[in-house]
Length: 239
Image 1 (tube, one colour):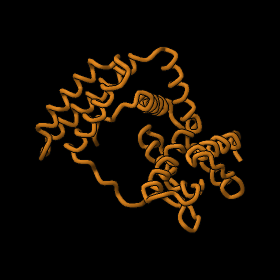
Image 2: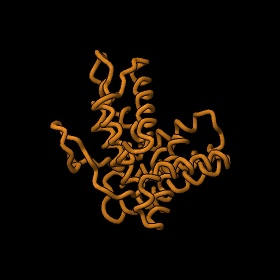
Image 3: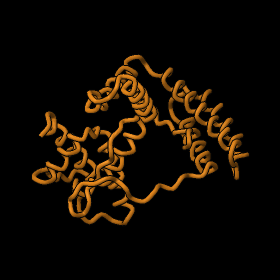
């Protein structure tokens, strides 16, 4: 068991208890070893929580709940989200999955469907409009401007190909940077410092084997991701 695994398991157990509406299922025996494996792989707690959320949301979508969720059922979703996190922050390494027979292997699975550009813009506009209706007023001006820019892009997005589509995608990348910069400028120094420490903690299991330049790039990407989560910002870029 790696150092800190017991605390990690307690955090996972407490989170699962909340998702199960207070029903506590102890993480012991094989379940404890499974969760310790997440800690050993370097799965950040928030990433594990999102994986649990993903399973629970799918479980609820099937109809009325019959029994509490066990942590073992969340394994595939946790590792899927971990794989997405690693790609987002630039941490290398093969994704590990656990098959029905318990053997580990490379993550394969069906390919993800790409979102269409018009649908992506519709979702981004809706998210920004919802933010505009929130309590905070610090980002009102930039949100209004971004919605206006996205509306114009949406009007010509359907059926774009080649260079015209690449131009819109480049525009979205620039708008995403503006959104993150505005959100960063609206936060206090203490909040930004706390997000920076959280990013360092998430990358700590990987730092020793990362070149300095790669680590700095991953740290910046991880900090941006945490900033986006903190401010509930949509992703404006589209791959």
